Amino acid sequence: MTTAILSALPEEQSGLVAALQQPRRSERAGRVFWQGQLHGRPVVLALSGIGKVAAATTAGALIEGFGVQRIVFTGVAGGVGDGVQVGDLVVAQDYLQHDMDASPLFPRWELPGYARTRLACDAPLSALLLIAASAGLKSAGVVFEAHNAARPPRVHQGLVASGDRFVATAQESHQLRARLAAAGHEVLAVEMEGAAVAQVCLDYGIPFAAVRTVSDRADDDAHVDFLQFVQTVASRYADHVVQHLLPLL
Ligand code: ADE
Image 1 (cartoon, rainbow, N blue to C red):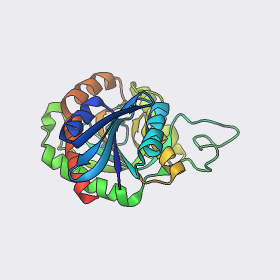
Image 2 (cartoon, helix red, strand yellow):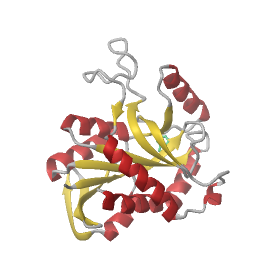
Image 3 (cartoon, rainbow, N blue to C red):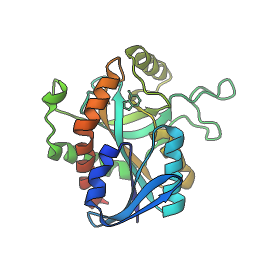
Image 4 (spheres, rainbow, N blue to C red):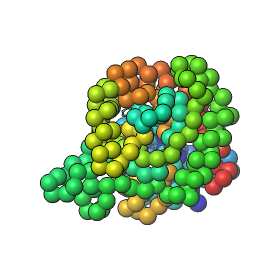
């Protein structure tokens, strides 16, 4: 069974490409795909692109063009839930699109044509990803003092919200979280792609799981924290989590 490892950032992908056995590079839809073996498992590596449409195109190409049978996403996210700190990992249990609004035709956040707001990740695959995320966090050995955290990094599992916005003010982050919470959706983190890939995987009936490293708190410092974090920590986490996941598949 071929697994797609979809990375949000080149920094996250480079270690995986370097470790790929019998690597084969190809291009499709203006994107680069790497096929090969990683830890003895057939994989295709790709960059998601930024935003929901870019990520959906990449996911479609992986499924239609490369026949992948499951997709695992690694990336970064802004932490919005209580206690979701920079350096923590969030394994998605389900996703919603926080910028979906077809009201009054459909309830706010509902996906037209799907009769639902939330898209569940594959439970068995997510359970393995949760194990790999905990193991990866330990083996990556990232020094948490580096990002001023009060405690060592932690793994969370829960709802992640995607939208075509980099959330970069405390006001927007609080508002987004409070509005969703009032409708019963307690969001742990925000990012820009996962819900789109979850929707494509639902359409094709293939398992999807995602892990996000919290790079910022989606507040007024988000852009500074994000850039620093991506360069220093994100790539290391992604490598370690994938290394632990593949043998479990
Ligand atoms: N990915 C990482 N941080 C983010 C943020 N603050 N908003 C949206 N996507 C993100």
